[in-house]
Each structure stands twice: as structure tokens, then as C-alpha cells.
Amino acid sequence: MKLAEALILRADLQKELMSLKNRINQNLLVQEGEKPSENPYTLYDEILLKVSELEGLILKINKTNSNYITSNNESISDLIVKRDMLGKKISILKEIAEEATVKVNRYSQTEIKIFSAMKVDQLQREINKYSKEYRELDTKLQGLNWTIDLMD
Image (tube, rainbow, N blue to C red; front, side):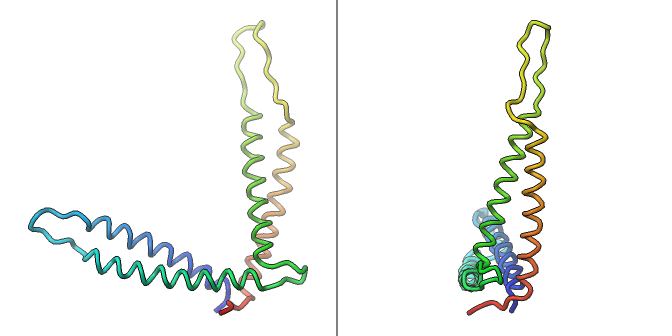
């Protein structure tokens, strides 16, 4: 199995777990004399099996990410951290740029003018630069995921 396939399977398992949890919640309480439409104990047993399957899969994914070394002598885990930190920088800079562009209405000429202490155009250039780096790194990771075999 390729790493990309394992990542898709992980996402599917996580969705299945949420669905099972919701189905249990819908069948926890019933009126006296009624029966739930699904047995919550059976659903609970399914959850335990899926959690165990997910755990094994995540261990294999993490092992693969940590042990596979790219041509630049970086592990997949290293690249994921770099991508995630680029995403964090982008998110923070976007929030700052948004706050810096807020207009303060003045109701008379005597009110104090408010100016941004940071240059929004410069912030936007940095956002664009980090966004490009993020996209390139994410594309590299996506490509690698389809070439790397999942480790046991």
C-alpha cells in the first residue's frame, strides 16, 4: 500500500468513527417500552475495532514519515512540520493584515487620525511568498505520498 492510500484510509476511518459515535448517541435514550433502532453495544464494539485499526494504521504512517529520507536528507515528518509552520505563518499574517486594514471612522476633523503601524502591502507580499512556498511543499508531499510504500 502506498502512503497516500494509507492517508486516505486514515481519513475514512476517522469519518467512520464519527459516524458510529453519532449513531450510538442517537440510540442511547429510548422511551420506556421501545427499543433502539440499532444496538448501541454492537456499535460500541465496532468503534473499538475501528480505533484499533486506526491505531495500527497511524503507527505505520508515522513510521514511514519518520524513516523515509528524501534526496534533500529530510524526512517526510520534517517536511510536514515545515508545511504546517508555513500554514501557521500565513494564518497569523492574514489576521494581522486584516486588522491593519480596518478603517476607523472619524466623525469630525478634530478627532485623532488612526493609522496602521504595519505596511499592509508588505504583509501581503509576505503572505504571497509563504503561500507559494506552502503550495510547492504540499505538492511535493502529495507526490511523494504516491511513490512511498507504507512501512510495517
